[in-house]
Length: 407
Image (cartoon, rainbow, N blue to C red; front, side):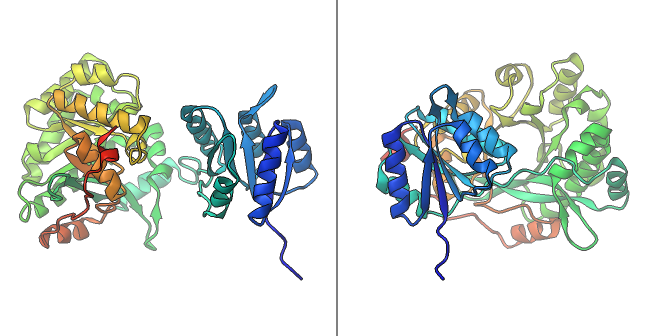
């Protein structure tokens, strides 16, 4: 008995386009059928029909493809969605982001009119997995988090930050990791929101600062100019005593203030208060560096850069990861990097995962790169071993091409 063919559904109110897509899918080895509306698609699914792929037109007469996405999500459809549209790239990209947010799998995008060979090539490609996100903090409680803190189960791991011009390690970002007794890891997405909501973010952050500085003091014997960066919650900026506590931690670890970078997540909202301004200014006066993290994701970006004494700008990975091809994401990276340089800030690109992206970041004028290309977060001992061996991240840059140079 031959195996059943994978099934495909085309949702398109244009009869000719629908027929072209069905024919191309059939030639690619699919059992394909088509419908012209949201109502027809819903009826098929309610009858128990299951599909591996849904080819979706974003314009469906009185309906639109976004309603189809919501319907697919509500019915827990496991098919990968292929967008087919004549709209501009921004509309398609926004629709893709909505599909991902709804927990759907995205299989790619096609421009209309559909070219049969383009659809067949896309259908043969591996699916672009976009698993349904887990709920932040699911399964954790403030009591469990407090016990983990008391038991020393939460500790900083360190992700390298690399000078893009040379490949040398300039420092690391300390990232919280909850290591279970069996060695398993609990994702920060499952406990940081709990820490923020319960008020445990303050003791968690202070523990991270203490342990990160201790680690930095140890590895500075191999790289005296290495720094350590870590995130602080915006609400901590409304505590006037915070600079004194950080200074005591610096003195205890015997690490110079210039080796500490405190990152404030711009997307979470930087407090525009007299206390926050004073706290940040006092930290800078004492020599601590300050970074705007996730730059470009919040509404107060430019005001924050002007009003607060920042020394570093970190371009959010949402822009960096999409900047390896010409388009709006690359333009944003170039603009943000230029702004940072004009303000005299160190520009850091986070989310650098390929050599092509690293090259774009260098061409854009970013100074430092951080991401999986250079290494994932490591326990303190492993990161120190990396420095002890004199590791340099390179060669990782491609030759600049004409396409790369054009944002």
